Image (cartoon, rainbow, N blue to C red; front, side, top):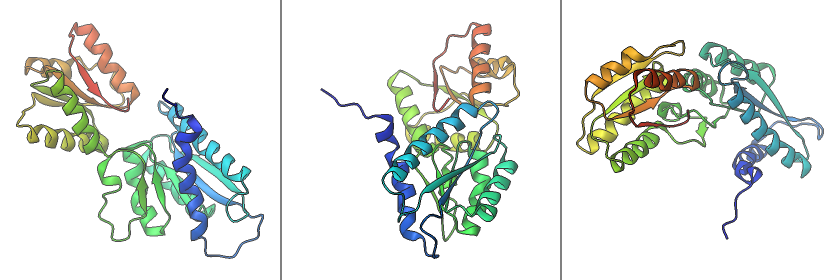
Length: 261
């Protein structure tokens, strides 16, 4: 019988990442002084449930570490800030956590645009930034000589390769892309194109969606008229839902391949 991993077991990599920081602490400290861990995530708006999921995961890991004596006899404390899925607010929140709260490590990486805004700051301040969700390839492949950015999520190129592979096995021949109009969508456009080119395939077209879109029929109509037989979709929950609703209004029964939504 297969043994299913508990949520706690799945969170142990995060716990290990937090615990390993203790070995890197060089400044003297009182035994009771907590080691601060920062979280920058969307705690309000359309991605709030995802931000709360990150909070629960870190909380479970930290509680387990503290129940076992903490790190070098010191408890771990979580301090979180809401980035509202806004890159500018995310960067300011990360700066506050690093410079005012003196966190040892930053966790975050729910939205690719926010993560990309935090990356230069983390490298400048030499504060480790652990991305746990956002898949933008350039988050970790950022060109910094001293790169303090790490991840536990797959990069877009790997995800896009898997989606195209799945689509071709299902008979996809001429996909159309409908992508969120931000750096995450741009990263996936590159990944999809690479995966298709590797197979000698072409695409019907590329259309963009915005977080504020309530009707995506015009974009979908252009893709349909171009001969799209499968949609490769990348978007947050809100605009992706509008894509599905628009497909229903059009009566267009087309396969949709997507991730993270």
